[in-house]
Structures are given as C-alpha cells and as structure tokens.
Image 1: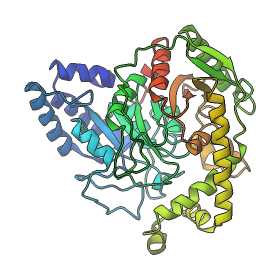
Image 2: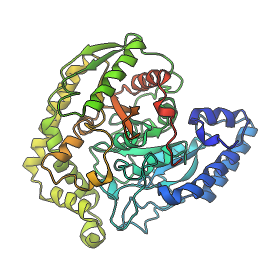
Image 3: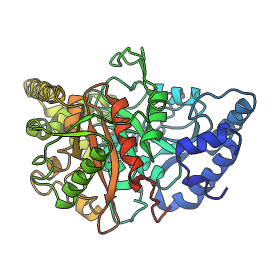
Image 4: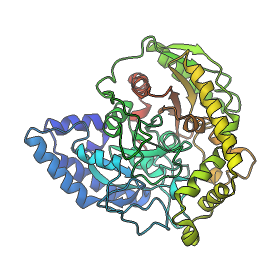
Length: 465
C-alpha cells in the first residue's frame, strides 16, 4: 500500500488491528519515508530504526495472538527529544547535553511503550525547548514552504507529523510550543490542562508552565494519544488523581448546545484580518454543528503576557542549574539570555508575577462560568517567514504580540486544542484555538472533531511530503 502514510492514525490502527496490514509493513514504510525525505526536512534528531522494527514485530505477534493493547498498538510515533528514553539518547536540542543517554524512560515514554507504540525516533526541537534552535543544529524545514517558520519548540514534531513521517507525536507547550508548530505545519495539537499529563522524565523548560500533549493530523488522533499518556503519576505530584475519560470513545458525542464564547474585539484588534476572518468562519462552522456562539469579554491578559519571559526564565534557571555554570560555552545565546534573566529576577518580582497570574486565572474562570469554551486565534498573524522570525524582538513588544494568544493559557494552566483553519494566499496553513476550563479536554476534542467533520484543512498534504 503505497499510500499508507496518507491514513490518519486511527485509520491505520484499524487496519493493523484487523490484520489487513501489518505493523511491520507500516513501520518499514514510515522508516523508508524518513530515509527519503528527512535529509531535507530534518525533523528527526535520532531515528530509532532498530527499536521500531523490533517493536513492530512484537506488535504483530501480540495482535496475531489476540492481544490488542489499544489504539496506538503498532503505530509509528515520534517523541519530542526531551522525553527520556531508555534505548536512545535525549539531546534536548542542545550541545551541552549532546552525550546524554539517561537509560530510563520518562512517564509518557513508558506509557506509550506499554501501549505497544512503535518509536520511529526522537524529534528535533529548539535548544532547551525555548525560542530558537542551537546555532550548531540545522532546524527542521516547513514542508509547506522552506522559507517559513516551523513554530517553537516542538518544531520537529510539527514537521514530522505534517510530512507523514510519523502518525502522531508528542510536543510540549510552555508559551505556545504545541500550538505554534501545529498552526505552522497544518496539524492538530492539544495542550492539556495542567496536571493531566505527567511531566516526570521530560527535561523541563519551566516546571510551572510546561505541558506535554499530542500532535497529530486530527482531533480524533489526538484523542487516541491523550488517552494513553494522561493520568495520575506518583512521580509527578502535580498530576491530578482522577479517572481518565475515554477521549476517543466519546469523540463523536457532538456539540449540540455547547456554549462557545467569542470576543470579536479580542480576535480583531491588532490581529491580521485574514486571521480574524478564519476565526469567524470557524464560529460559523461550529454554529452549524449546533454550538451556541455567545459574546464574551476576554479578560485582560497584558500583564501575564508581558511577564511571561521573566517567569519562565526563573524556572529555566532552576532546570539548567546542574549544567549552566560548567558548560555555559555550549549554550546558544538565546537560551543563555533567558537563564540570565531568570537568575537576575528578584524574589519580590517573581511574587508579583505569581499574584498577577492567579488574578488572570481567576478572571478566566469567571468567564468559563458562563461558557463551555472560548474561540480565539492561535497567533495574531499568518505563519511568518524565517526572515521575519530572525528579526523578532528587534521591535519592542513583538515577542509579546506573538505569544498573546498562547502564553495566557500556559500561565492559567487551561487546556486548548489548535486546529487547522484554512490557508493564506501563500498556501501556508492558518490555525485557531478552542480553549476551555481545566479538565475540559474531552469536550474540546469533541468540538475539534465536529469542526473537522465539515472541513478538510487537516487532511491536506504538504508539497514536501
């Protein structure tokens, strides 16, 4: 089947489990595509071909014997290269950790392995999961157009998933790093709420802002992945000890009567008109599926956006404390500057940010008392060029503008699903978010799935794939 790579994760899973095609065939097909295409796209930091081949053979034997571990059994998958793996190095996009082979699995890695997932490899990422790739590392290339941004920091996850070099992947989101590459690469990404997915065994950028979540081609595919990785973990005391919903089993529940808030001013002021038009079209599609689109006033997020870098920097300084002083020469200038910002932040200033974060989270909770979810852009303009991103920060407020729709939901710890919503005149994907209160991931995925029943943006194939 020469078009195996065009199948959604849930579609290829059904074929593997019915033994219409073997996991070994799907894995060989995926590895061949990686070998053929990734020399240009650069999405993988480490290809785990031997491990993947062995895991696929094991999956086929188990399925033939009547044991199906779940929807990811036998599925070639990509891990962001900050997820610890016992059988591959974990580079964290850095030079300082280039020789690090921890020899153990992190929690999400272990859960995926237990579910019978096939590890195609570790996906490339920005240095330390911050803003840019280390100067010595060739960044992944956007499969829609090589001159355009791939998003941060889960760039390899976005590229590899969009280019059909895996059926799904993990990303992490601290200020937007699941949602930016999802938009830039035209895939679906879910940033779970804080505490749903364990961060144990994932190298941190910010212990208080990091979220691990799925990136795939559809909301249903993300639901399949989330059902495997979610849940309480004693190794991460911040996880919530509560039952994990059957995200995939309830994906078709529909959104009849779902109250979705829309602040038209928030979605249009200092926002590119093409982005605003896309969000309004998404509202129409969701309304057509039975949602009640209600006017709201989104709470002022200015302070939490403006202080995000300071807040993140303090946590990053802690994460890199064992390495930075000794190996500072191995760090790129951008990550180094973030760590220095964190080291210089006073305790009083940090406390002020915590106070403002809690005020914003409370104001957002008040909005969710009246609606089930909120519809907003993923970013204020279409996917930018690499040249534009190289100059980002030169103009005061430009970084804050970029993260204005993403960082607030990392600060508040609220979940968000990012969905492909169209294309601009340069044939680059556009994307938007549906955000919800804590523990609303099941409803957000249902909304995303409903939207994708009436649109086909998520199924488009990039030219480089």
